[in-house]
Image 1: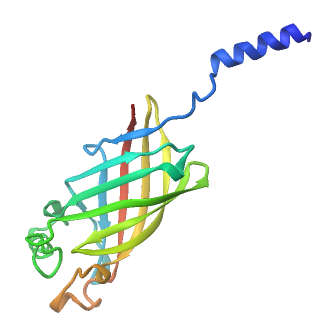
Image 2 (image 1 turned 90 degrees about the horizontal axis):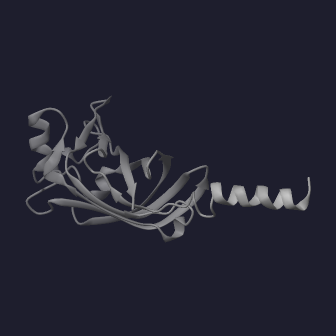
Image 3 (image 1 turned 120 degrees about the vertical axis):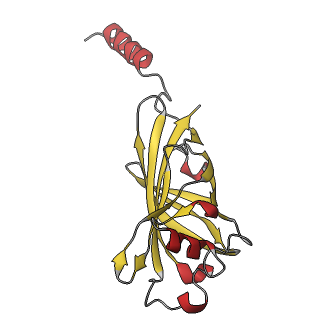
Length: 189
């Protein structure tokens, strides 16, 4: 192969795959498709619930994770565990106390690449005016048309946030560990 042929081949590759073509920055969360679920253990049995309403802002370039920014605000009134009596109790003063603290928030402080579109997300989680640092793994699944899905799960200690006062302060009926599962659908500009 002559140097002219190599040069033409390289030029064709550059035209087909321009530099930076894979770089993408996700800057919107499609909350209608996204979900925040939680899995507490009640009387020894895993139960699943969700928060129906939340907002989230994100600025995330998978190639520059250290520059990522994320913030979420959860409307605690939208708590749903599938039966009214438990939902009403959770919204009251012994649990979320939504009259005093109607929102929970998460603000990222650092994102670290783990390889193969896996990342460790670190930030501050605030529930009932108690702020605690959390870190957990997330996985990015790239989809067509500048869209992606970000999946992650973390385990929180409910008592660290004052969730479960009075008769609920023990862990016999409701375990201290609660798994929170995130599924966020991201869009790019």
